[in-house]
Figure (cartoon, rainbow, N blue to C red):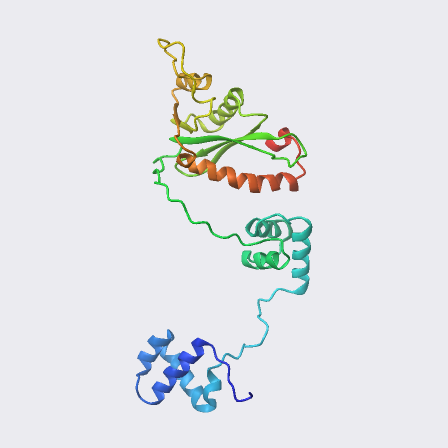
Length: 284
């Protein structure tokens, strides 16, 4: 067994090329191209091969600890924090918190491996993607704003369940407005729109679903009325000259739907870490 020399595939390739050089079957420049190194490095490998043979092509670092290996103290601290403060966090968010709050210099992949080893994270099986025809983004910031309500247990039982009203710019994907409300009502949206316009100005259009706040879903009994088919919210937007567009499917307003998923993961954890248990503090 002592005569066996373990070599990687890369090292075996180098050995074969060097042997071909020795047999004058290759030029040094061609060998350098095949190995992806410089001619100078090829000459160095040839000299080493002539002196010590095959063993010269085996990495000298094999079996040694990496210089970038984390210290035992850093690993212990990271594991303790992951178990006590971030047990249900994903690796990316946990990495952000370890870096921001505790200045631990770990990569996302290192955090992922730690969480898998501690059975705090299990890699999800990738789902087969469902292809939907993409709607092109609007050309300009503020031209179209996607709006939606996200009912969820935002305070994880520390307060009553409520709804987060989410406004996201279609052109840039930027979160423009977040506002908690007891329920997804017309007056909750009025307050959110007022706050949005005060801060950002008036958009050209809002893009929503077909929820009853935005669209009359029952037959209208006043066919000759100038506001036929408009809800209170719709009439207010008409007065403001803001177009109200109702999507035919959740996929059509996918940007705000994906933002809801991210917020239900990340924002919930931020509220927990900051000890926030009511809507007023959450707004602040």
